Length: 148
Image (tube, rainbow, N blue to C red; front, side, top):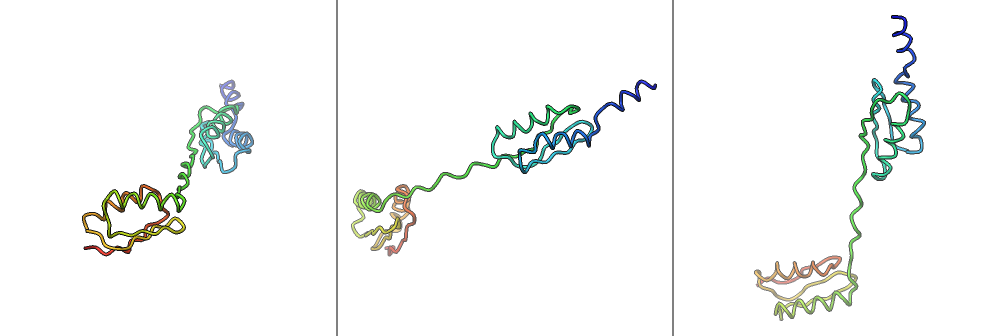
């Protein structure tokens, strides 16, 4: 009986394990750890998957850790930057679209990436025109067309 008590007294306490892990992961800001019955739970946000894995490895290396519950999150990558074509390219593409769609009563001007449409168009032709214009990546389309 005395031997069992002596062995359990030698086991690291959760608070001591938690303190050791906190020291081991101190290079990773925004990461927190709690320990319960030798299971370390990691929470917070890290920059990428390799950092997430490195923090988990550091926690596992601490004496007394039975397992690691890695709840660290990685933010999604930022969206790609929006590409806006230069005015000359847009103007040429707009002219080609209007000619190809045989929209002789539609006029277009391009300034600072903004396509301004004027003139007349049939209701059925408008969605196709707008779709094709969006495909050439303008900053904006100002529709001042009169629908006939």
